[in-house]
Image 1: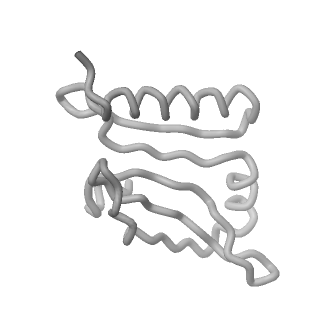
Image 2: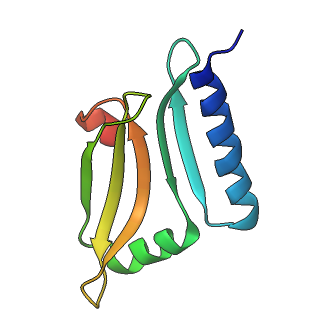
Length: 103
């Protein structure tokens, strides 16, 4: 019997892998824990990767969004473009804010 959280993890991974089929620059990377449960998840689309290549000299991230049923940090990586607009570079679901996690 699979839990709802495990079903959610499988569904989001299937969705993100589907995005890779339509966006060849789309990246998804994840790790699993010792129990084979989703541990950390990172994703970004092609537009974000291009923007990062151009404007990635300044990177900020915000991990204040922990109000989800998975008790994971929702992290947004952002930068600023030449019009001083905030632009997203990628997103992640993380367990903690340690250096190893961010690496």
